Length: 356
Image (tube, rainbow, N blue to C red):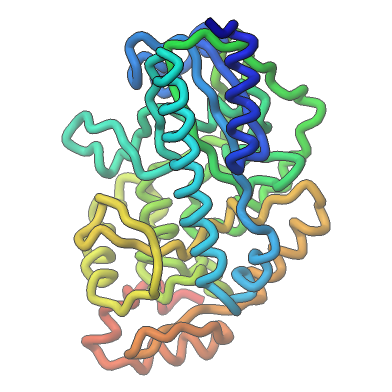
C-alpha cells in the first residue's frame, strides 16, 4: 500500500512527464470556505483531494497572431494543447483507479454544470481550475482573473483530477512574488469589456484570501472570443473576427444581441480548424481572440510590445470566399460600407459602423 507521500510524488512526476510544467495539490481542507465552484464533492461525493496541473501554449506563435499575420498556427496549438491537458487528466484518473482509488478527470474547458434553464449561457464549470491552481501554488491571479505564471505568463491551460485518495496539499505562492502590477493591459486588449476596470472580488480558500478584477457576464466572452463580434470600441483594431456587431454596455442587453449575431455567424464562411462546443448550432467555433491570455507576460517590455502589435495589427475583413486579412481602420470601414445589403447584414449593425 502506497503512502500518501509516495502517491502524491508519483502523480507530480507523472503530470510533468506527460507534458505539464507545473503541478499542485489541494484537499477539501485547503478549499474549505470557498464558493460552490471549489466543491470537490460536486464532481465526486467521496472526494478528498485533487491534482491540478498547467500546460503552456507556444510563446513563439503569439507575435504573428497579434500582428494578424497567422491565425491558424496559434489556434491549432491552443486546441491541441488543451486536448493534451484533457488526455493527461484522463491518464492520471486511470492510474489512480488502478491504485484502487476513485478518480474523475475534469476537462480543461467546455464542460459545464447542467443546472437551471440557462446553464448553456451561464457556463459554470464543474470545478474551477483557476481557484485550485491559485490555492495549490501553480500561479497567482492576474487582474484579469487568469492564472499567471513566472514561466509563461497567462498563456497556459489548466486541468484537474478529483479523487478520494489522500494527497499532500501544496502551498500557494507568496503574494510578494506576483508580478501583476495592475497594468490592466489584459483589459485594454479585451473588446468585450469582460472584466471590470475598477471593482475587484475576493475569494476565501482554506482561510486564505485571493483577489482579482470582477468578471462580468460570460456572454461577453462568448460573443467576442467565439468570433461573433470583434471590433474594439475605438474602431482602430479588431480580433480575428470580421464582424462588427454591437457589444452592449450592459450585461442584461446581451440576451437581445446574441441571437442576431449568432445567426449571422452561422451564415458567414468559417476558417479551418476551431473547437467543438455545444453552445451553437453546428457545434464548431473559432478562437478569434484569447487576447487576455496571450498579452500577459512577466516582462513588462514584452507585455507592452504585444499590446502594440495588437493595436497596430489593424482590422480584419473577410471576402466572399472566407479569406481574411487585416487592413487599416479606414479601409475596413470603407470595405464594410460598400458591401451589398445581404452580405453587409452578416457583419455589422448600424451603430457600430457609424461610430468613429
